[in-house]
Image (cartoon, rainbow, N blue to C red; front, side):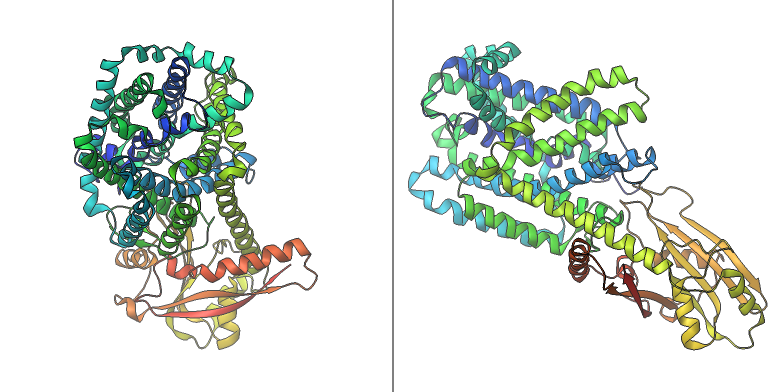
Length: 635
């Protein structure tokens, strides 16, 4: 099974991959919490603000994600598409509103993949301004250089350097925990923040505008919490929980309490770069280096996660079939998507130059995270009722408060739309619209393909039995979702095209259809072979291949295995195969309405960046193909 072989010690690996993003949030979260104030915060405001941070971290990450969401595994896998697949099993009536909401959440995650590297690396490099104010002018160029290097090495994969992620992040958590503990020891009054009453009092005594600003900043402490679920398949739920409760969670509590303690002694320091002020001056440069390396690791984990997210969307037929390179064949999740890589890089560069500081980028950051977490909470409430068979009362008592918390964060961050919140919204809706258009276009293409005139299967069998001459070959025909195993159905349009052009049928025909069930892996019944016709003239066989959305669809290898098992008859040398595939030529109807025409043109543009399906299935590289152009009329 292609997972959980990334690290010998999964807990250590989880520290580097799962908790990189949330682990580097202390670089900017507390500073941004008070950045909006014109005056230094009072002790009550500091204690209340830190209390709000601690209890948000506890409820949203420790309780919701670590204890509840990690239970929702889809064959051991997690993430938005695993949850999408789980819910799809219990909703057979097409695409539900909740399913589309999850896809919107996936779009927001893509926006997160652009913002996180920009704000994380920028916030670490900004430490130079604290160490030596004269170096402030180098912050942006150095950040851009680090990002360029980070995206440049993506094609090599993260496996080689991945072994360093865990030890580096363990060092990071240890250092920020010690820095926090030192400040707590010096100013123990901050321990009052452990009581949630101070967080409640802060919100009660604050006006609506101030509370919205607070909640809009507090969400930054839980960014990266969703990685727990997304990376569950790589490490397992138990190791992730252990790493969280034993190392990451205590270290984060200590560093946030420590920053609050420092503010009690020097409230004027409230603002960006607060964490750097906790570091002894002699150790500041080494700490900046450690912080920079840690943010690069956090960014790497998120970039890899974005590649995996896109590859899963492609496998589910929800995204154009971009070129995917597998950087390590033994690990399904280790992929490199060149188009997405450079799209992310361009987005990161634009954000760093456009916003100029981590404080300004903070306004753009929270909305994507809050939106995705809200979608997850709603989906989990439905899952608990439908899949786990909880009573409606139990599901509501547990998840309704979490939905309200997430909704509060979404509302608070929606007030920052004009200040930068439009960035993740635009990115999220662009990705979501891409999914909608691609799904619509593929469905229309398939419907038009299946509506083409073709021979009924009984007539095809009769022609094959009585024919005097044949094309002396075994033809492999890649067909769409068309169950030609039933004799009442019509023959695939591709076969009709070959027969009309050549005036004869191949002696042996193998229909191959690839199916993608909404599960991560296929453990059994990957191949289903049906003999449709077997007579002295030859054989007609139908082969269905099934691949999960975490697997590499390799049709060539599948055909070789079936030939070795004598399920089908093929030459041992795949270079002698005759594989026929379809390339559609789209033709819009003349009476197409304006909205449908816009969707059609958008679909045409997406097809320009999409590989042909046969490349996605591993064909066309060393297997000779006959590509048949098939006109498809859109109505």
